[in-house]
Length: 240
Image 1 (tube, rainbow, N blue to C red):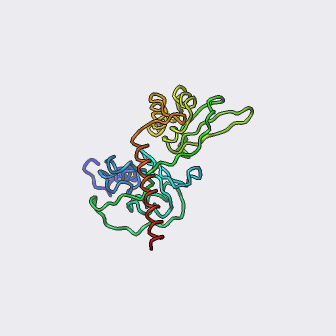
Image 2 (cartoon, one colour):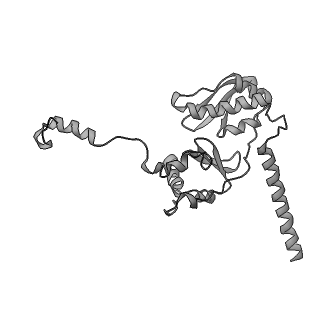
Image 3 (cartoon, rainbow, N blue to C red):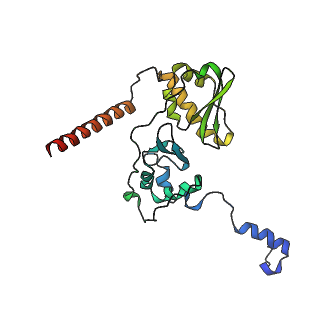
């Protein structure tokens, strides 16, 4: 201000100085209370983008930057850290209660009660025959496949990129060849869907092939544990 006090400069100059006082930002202040925790992918899978109930898999899902988390019941969402719970009304305006704020440290954070097995919905197996395009929707935060059956336009909504593994080999080949469309600012999220399609095509992963992976092994192990638990309960009821 050329060594002048604030009161000595003109109104126009004061307005210009006011603009420098406060930095405009669109980032919510409480979004990253523990940035190092949120960015450690061994612990967290990123900030929340959206969440909803998915009737096709009968579960609640939270879409994050790097993955999708599933919850069997709405109350299990409250097992998330308080800053995640407070974030939910901001990304989707629903009147769910917010857990009372608790002072927690990184060593006291408990894992949320998410589903261990990824629920996969039934997929249309022949959409490649009338395939038109697929795009990432920034409004619904999902990939939308558009295809034609005779004179009818149909849509397939993919909330989780991993749902692609349940497509047929021909459908996956179609998604691999015809790349997903997206806006520049949505590139990171859209390419998660394209990467899954590419890996499935290269590795021969599809609904027609009993492919093997750690995911499949974990799924079988969890199913055996559940079966054993049911047997133990029945045995206890009989003997009790």
